[in-house]
Image 1 (cartoon, rainbow, N blue to C red):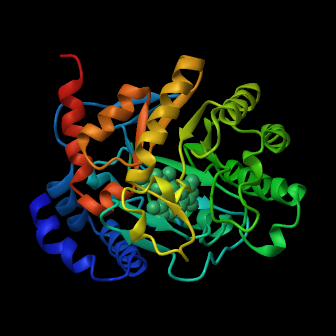
Image 2: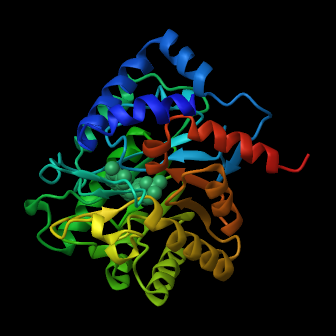
Amino acid sequence: MDFLYRRVLKPILFKMSPDTVHDLFLALGEFSGRLAPLRWLFNFLYGYRGPAISKTVDGITYRTPVILSAGFDADGRLTRILPSLSFGGEEIGSVTAQVCEGNALPRMTRLIRNKSLVVYKGLRNRGVDALIAKMKRTPRVPGFVLGVSIARTNIPEASTDVEAGIRDYEESFRKLNEAGIGDYYTINISCPNAYTGETFIQPALLAQLLPRLREIPCEKPVYLKMPINVPWEQFAQLLAIADENKMQGVIIGNLNKNYDDLAYPEDAPKEFRGGLSGEPTFKLSNELIKKTRGKYGKRFTIIGTGGIFTPEDALAKFAAGADLVQLVTGMVFNGPGLMKNIAKRYAEELPA
Ligand SMILES: Cc1cc2nc3c(=O)[nH]c(=O)nc-3n(C[C@H](O)[C@H](O)[C@H](O)COP(=O)(O)O)c2cc1C
């Protein structure tokens, strides 16, 4: 099946714009999820059926330790089909308090030799109310974990000042908790293409945001989505604030803003805006995972994200100290068989 994807499907898909392919995938995935025979077919092709590899983290059991990263399914349209692709969970979102159109097209560009996507989506999503309504009317697949990532609405009216930003996060967080939607929550402070920039990666401002969110009753684990381009001193300050505010864990991390990290920088036209996914995030994220584990031991759950294209890449994230992994670009480049291959390889590594 991997061969079929790489030799037949991928050359066709990669002739279309990534935004078009993404829309197609969402429509096909949502449709397939509604129909039992199609769910069965995808499960037959891409479902993991080896020895049990489930993993319980913060009281939540994942059938496989592979989660779809935030951003691919911002509006929760794929919740019924992703379990058939060997994902143990998905992170819906990032969702924002208000509807958010996102940036102008193109919102994604492929850098094929660099194994990367330039992501300029600008937090496009239908807003938290629409997400809650959608989740309430969509039957859940038992055992499939749904995290929800929350970000600040990326429109000028909501971007006036820090207090407006805090209220925006508060609104989404409160509404999701009250509705009981989501098994865990992620506070995304590190979207590189929002009007206000990454306001809350400044430690002094994160120290204002998190206590406000803690005032909202929440029984579920809460994670912080970390930036990967800040110096270690700043990263460590953010971790200390997450610790003080009793956050269960961190996701390491978001997109890479540094175009010098591309293996072929000449492939990225100068007018490009947006963060880089895939290969240019791999090493940075692994190093930060290692340092975080080294400094904090088991204090934080760590979800490792960035540049997983092969089962070996996933094992490298676990070896660095990740409890779970997330991916998106690897699936775009290597096809929907990747998660099953990771699960199989992960099973081989488990002690007998
Ligand atoms: C199209 C796209 C949209 C993304 N949108 C979000 C988002 O809304 N929130 C977020 O926290 N991360 C977002 N990300 C970042 C991913 O969740 C992930 O951290 C990053 O892409 C590294 O993983 P990868 O190399 O497997 O893609 C997005 C990534 C992509 C490719």
